Image (cartoon, rainbow, N blue to C red):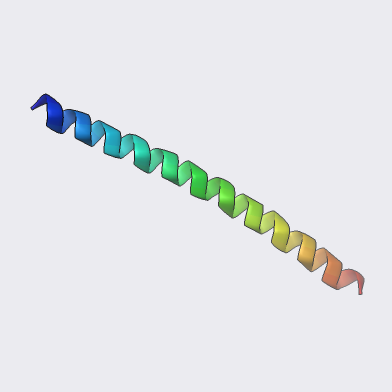
Length: 43
């Protein structure tokens, strides 16, 4: 029973860490897109 609870906890921890990582990557991509958009507007 303890091993199942441990596996569930580890899975949840990795899922949360993965979501945070993807959210950070999404923000980086969004900022890069804004820079490209600004550069296009200046031309």
